[in-house]
Length: 461
Image 1: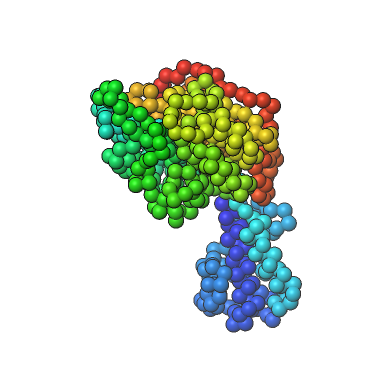
Image 2: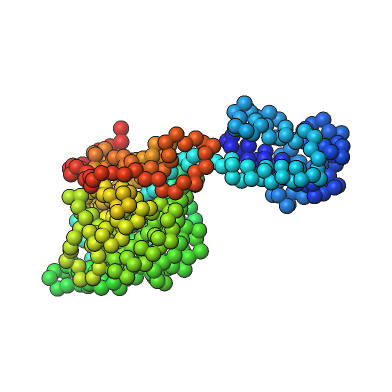
């Protein structure tokens, strides 16, 4: 609040001085003195009118701001070194209006208001992770309804409704979906997913990645409910999440082709700038080549990799699978892409039932946290369980929660609730310090793995 008031004061002062330099009609108490205090012989109405004459040039409402800012603030005793505690008091001194000094002073004030007095450190903020929602969208074959006794789409709707309602409280900056959005790439299933995600449109930016269940569906003859997935890369994803619907969003960075199958996205908190690179199931070599280029072109963006299949529940990167589509499993992704960039710090994935966690060191010495979350094997096909990750810049850590919005309950086991070290602010950095340093990282000496701990739901105390 103090920084906001100071910035407003500086903007007003620079506006007032600018007007008096370039608009002779603005009254002065003398040919060499500018005035902003209450003792001027000029009437308040005249002053407001003359200041409004140049208000459009500097974007302030000068009259009302002048009266408000001449009152002392509660926090006026908190001074920034080298800056008067009340910037407007500088204006009460005699200044040669048409001198080079005055114009230099205007430049200094504008500089301080836009650069030197930035907002305080970034606030804690949250990234929400939606694991596999395939059981909530299972209508073609209805396997989930057969197993659990009912349609489960309500859980998907509950997840996005909670995200929207918690946006302000948790300062939610972005949402990612880890793939297997649908069960069998069926239009009715995609419609459920689109309706659920539409709750966030215009409120919280998000992106999704494709899982094996979202592509290449083929019915087999082994049983009425048997089928294959990912026999090829055909998908209806673009029909329900067209690139054209997202291309004009501020968060959208670009895509590999004219779909969102492989894409990248931006979000920020304060001066911390992030990028999410969303990759298809088992990304092809040419896609990884594109992803490498995108990350190289954004060295100042702290990068999160989102892909469906990467880590298993034994805290190991996947090395092979039985799917027909050709591409790179987790270990190959690490070798060809993830480990090569100093600004990649996080990989998020689903696909394998359960939870997993692995921290490895990239070739630049940067730690990369790799996290698995997939709750479809839990009661009711997942029962709305999700992850949210709260970044706490002041403490240089990420607090990870596993949460159920339907029951307002939380998992407390070490595999579900834990903290990750992540350097966001340098030690000892003050609120008045510029936050432009890019990607300070903490080295780790070796790969670390999370303990494999059985998980059972517990209620929030």
